[in-house]
Length: 149
Image (tube, rainbow, N blue to C red):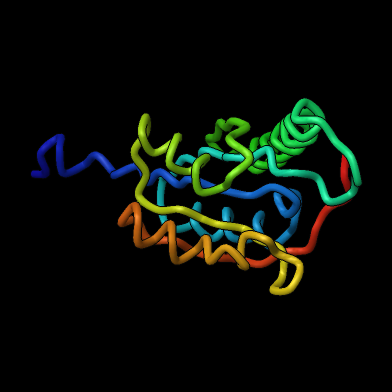
């Protein structure tokens, strides 16, 4: 007979980091894949990065765009039956990740970026910097940008 502890299935926690690619099908497919592997929960982090669509912008505009993307992304995840929450973070994706990891623990990070050439995050070598600095597995996926809200 199994003990109570043996019957409890471990809940995996994932930190999803995305901005312009949060609405992409590539990310939905990854979430679905992870859900088939067992119980999991997702925390979505949208760094309030400078919007490329605007020559001039305010910090408030960047945060409003990030918040709109977060709200839309959380709604899409919840439509899949995913347990999720999220937040808008620091404009620097590295600092935003560091801020979240100070308060919460995760099993892995999913980093969604634009394709090479268009992605500022790839130019910053964000994937490798995060992996080295925080010691968590990082899955990097590439998506297309969604239109600015």
